[in-house]
Structures are given as C-alpha cells and as structure tokens.
Image 1 (cartoon, helix red, strand yellow):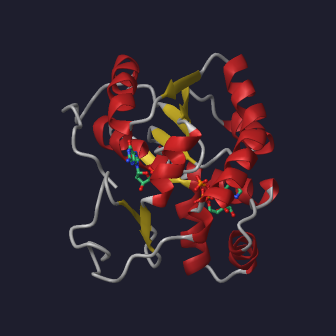
Image 2 (cartoon, protein in one colour):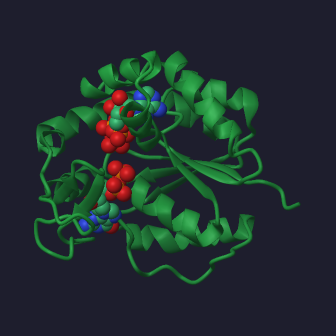
Image 3 (cartoon, protein in one colour):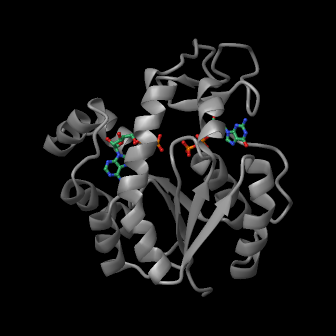
Length: 227
Ligand SMILES: Nc1ncnc2c1ncn2[C@@H]1O[C@H](COP(=O)(O)OP(=O)(O)OP(=O)(O)O)[C@@H](O)[C@H]1O
Ligand SMILES: Nc1nc2c(ncn2[C@H]2C[C@H](O)[C@@H](COP(=O)(O)OP(=O)(O)O)O2)c(=O)[nH]1
C-alpha cells in the first residue's frame, strides 16, 4: 500500500484555505477535514454536553478549549486511519499541534501568506449562505443568481466579522496564536509557505510541490475555481 500522506493547511481568515484545500483534495484524492465544519456539524446533530459546550464557544467566536477540541478531532481522525488526509483549521494552537504530533507524523504543513489589503478586499466582497456555510465571492466565485445561494436559492448575507476592524482583530489573533505552531513545524522541516495575492497564482506552485510528493489520481490542471 502506498504510504499515507498527512498534511495541514494554515492561514489567516480569507487567505483561501478552504478554496485551496478543495483543489488539493480533488487533485490528489486526499480526505479533507475542516475543523470548523466538523464542529458545526457536531453542534447541529449532537445535542450532548460536548455539542452544547462547543456551541457556547462558537457563538462567542472564541476558540474551543484545546482539551475539548482535541478530544473530538483525534477520534474523528482515527476514522480516517486508512486514508491520506488534509486538515484545515486544526491544529490552531500549540497545544493542539502537540496533541496531534503525539499521534501522527505530518508530511507537510502549508502556510498561506496573503497581504492584509487583499484579505480586506476579499472579505468586503464575501457573501455567505448562513444555513449551509457556503461561501461566495462576488468576483472570484459569484453565485449563479446575484444575492442567491446556488443550491437553495435562499438569500446570501454579509457578515459583521468580515468588516475591516473585525478582520484586523481576527488577523492579529491569528498571528499570535499561529506563530508558535508555525515555528514548531518550521523546526521539524515540514513547513511550506506560499505568498501571493491570488489563489490561482499560488495554486500552480503548490500543485507542483505536492505532485513531487504525492501520486495524482485526478491530475488535470485545475483552472476552475471551486467555492
Ligand atoms: N482548531 C480549533 N480550535 C478551537 N476552536 C475552533 C477550531 N476550529 C474552529 N473552531 C471554532 O469554530 C469557530 C469557527 O471557525 P472558523 O475557522 O470558521 O472561523 P474563524 O475562527 O473566524 O477562522 P477563519 O478565520 O479562518 O475564518 C471558531 O470561532 C471556533 O469557535
Ligand atoms: N478575489 C479573490 N477571492 C478569492 C481568492 N481566493 C479565494 N477567494 C475568495 C473565496 C472566498 O469568498 C474568500 C475566502 O476564501 P476561503 O477559501 O473561504 O478562505 P479561508 O477563510 O478558508 O482561508 O475569498 C482569490 O485569489 N481572489
């Protein structure tokens, strides 16, 4: 059996983690697990103490405590034991990274560096479908019908947290919390940083680095942006 590949993608809000993760998962046949989506699903379907606790943090837009999130994420990863995977949004803190390190040897950590001004422009152009979390960008991946979700036709909304002041605070928080995590992965020699203002320009570099490390079941060059 081919060696399994374990990767993590990190980056500030709006840097394109979700967009790029879907391309990687599609091109290289990796299982893609977004921690935020996983937690949202848990909150929606699991009314146990854990679900209620997680919801209380998400509602306040605070990070769920490390012990809680690792206790939920690590068993979820165990379910993917026979697969190569890409994690987005986990680990977010040094504590989470250390817990993950104890169980898995990561092959690659991707860090996205996108200038603040670019993030600000993107977020001011960002619309979401609240019920599903589907994200649209009016220039990059617009909905088929202006202001309406592609699947349900329901209205799209803009979020307070994507406004410039809130974005600045989120960015500062990301930098503080991510720095020790990135330092750890740098010291392990597995950190690959990609800088740029356009996902479609970053993608070919990333694709070629990944192609050198991984077989490509779906190796067509991916020029169509995904949401
Ligand atoms: N690894 C994690 N550790 C703790 N809490 C998490 C983690 N990932 C997601 N969460 C919870 O889920 C919520 C939504 O996460 P999500 O990544 O979508 O938004 P965010 O924190 O604003 O980051 P992004 O900045 O990339 O948009 C967070 O506010 C937090 O409560
Ligand atoms: N204009 C523009 N918008 C982009 C680009 N790459 C991604 N986007 C859009 C898609 C989303 O609406 C928004 C944030 O992207 P995302 O993939 O959800 O980012 P992240 O929050 O998961 O890191 O930015 C890009 O290269 N240019």
